[in-house]
Length: 321
Image 1 (tube, rainbow, N blue to C red):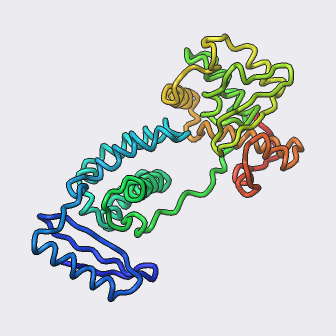
Image 2: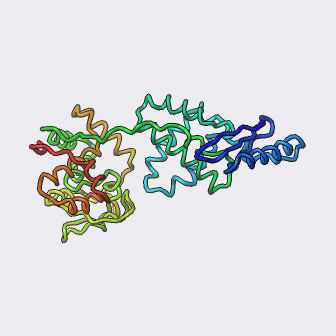
Image 3: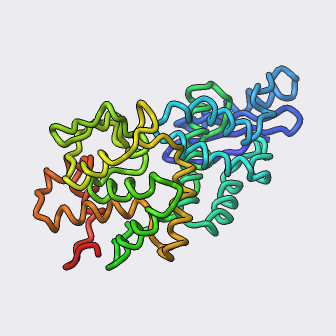
């Protein structure tokens, strides 16, 4: 009934019984683990062991609560809700009870999910691992040691090196101006002129734009620190040309609406390999080519370390066409 395993210099013991559930605990000394296991087995046999309140819960129950309780507190909640929505549709994984969720279960999920890309697989495993830790530590769920932490994670893809090729910028703008999705044209221009992220552009507020000082305040950013972004003449002209459709937001639309419009634009222009985030790479690379200093670029882009910044830089002899 009891199983023992040594991990990170400690002994983990798990007692499992189909009808009554399972329990586990970690000890420094094996003799203590053995002693505790014997005590628990006696309780099992005498019917005195109290069944865990989470013994009937599944991975679906775990991830659903995580989506409802933890995700709303995050800055990237919109994107994470979308990822969790897809993850919750995996009926095979979600149906597994938490007491049966051993490392090999998640290893099998990893191998299957890798077909959709290593980065996508990595995101899912990180969510699962964090949800397990939150449930065990903060919610008090009686769970074993984190099984996701015991498996190998896929290697993440190397940094993208995609920049705008000659003529692509003009093609994007000329096609965007024809679309009913009015926001595509100005968002493309602002992304290249300011290096702002898609989420930052979608959260852009009229009250945070200082037209006199030619800058905009981003109060909520990915790294958690607000920052001021200078506006070029082209960015200022672009912002002034936008018709106010909302009292607060410059671009009053959802992330999902923009993604669909952007994907349609790429198909129209036959620039399928370009992501909107690549425009941020383009902007930062052009700043280097224009002679901006590293501290200046870091202040504009919001990167906290030089190593993070350099992941975005691909220099070339010619700019966008």
